[in-house]
Length: 311
Ligand SMILES: Nc1ncnc2c1ncn2[C@@H]1O[C@H](COP(=O)(O)OP(=O)(O)O)[C@@H](O)[C@H]1O
Ligand SMILES: Cc1ncc(C[n+]2csc(CCOP(=O)(O)OP(=O)(O)O)c2C)c(N)n1
Ligand SMILES: [Mg+2]
Image (cartoon, rainbow, N blue to C red; front, side, top):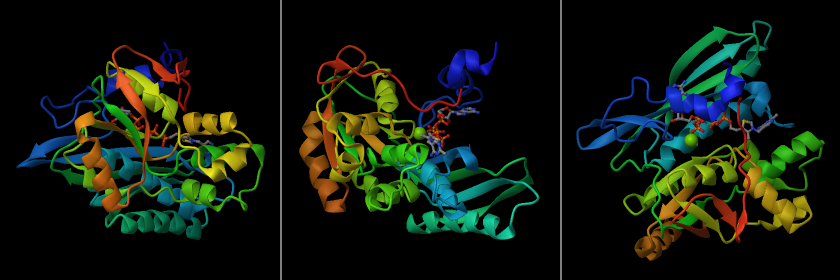
């Protein structure tokens, strides 16, 4: 049996519980792992990738380093942990320009700085191509699991929905992004949102979205609910890029790398969540609700499960 025969999700289901502590702040398979220390938890997350598989046209080592810290920080923030420090594992071929390696780390340092955090060293190895692994840690007073109960409202945090999907599409179609600065910014500098921490204690659950919204919503459904999407955020620039509502919706559902959070809000907490988000400057979009059953639907139509997968 090969990895491609079982696929990434089945593989991780088997791997994640190995060695994982019982009674941990979050279950194995959640966006970050952790241990209880004193009154709260310390959460830790690691995320690795090949340069060539994430560098969109126009991105350089600075942007890819930035993206590495962003991807890791996004998982921590979705769990209500404040990222404090990151380490950087690098694989570099020996003929690489020194300046390229330096720009990778400068980009990572800039993302950490913008999160109020630091780079705390790392590790460098020779490798056949450029690859990065970014680890990050931070404290969480109330670690937020992946959880949903029938009746909960579904909210999307942030404003990168559809924009990163558009940038990925532009990359593969050879389209320039000069006319779409917000799309370029969302894909090149996807800074996760410290403002999520303003919602501490109010949410039922949350998930980081990195493999596409549809895939993330299917993972919500696997928590034991049916997901009913009533609306999707269609930014004017994404609509203009896509050329129509249906195409724009596909970019929102099947983009990936948003590094934004999907939130489950108990209905009796909705007004407080909205007030706190507004106070913090966190964009929130009400996308629908969850109910009894299973599956993911947009206005009654099933949403196919397709997203980014490694195997
Ligand atoms: N090699 C591994 N060993 C144990 N757990 C893993 C491994 N790879 C991934 N996981 C776990 O599987 C889950 C999904 O992983 P992944 O898709 O990389 O997460 P994310 O999309 O948040 O980066 C996470 O809980 C992660 O910690
Ligand atoms: C050249 C290129 N092709 C495709 C993509 C899209 N893409 C690359 S990785 C990825 C998903 C997230 O990957 P990873 O960081 O491995 O996330 P994980 O699933 O571990 O969160 C997506 C949508 C891209 N950014 N650049
Ligand atoms: Mg995640």
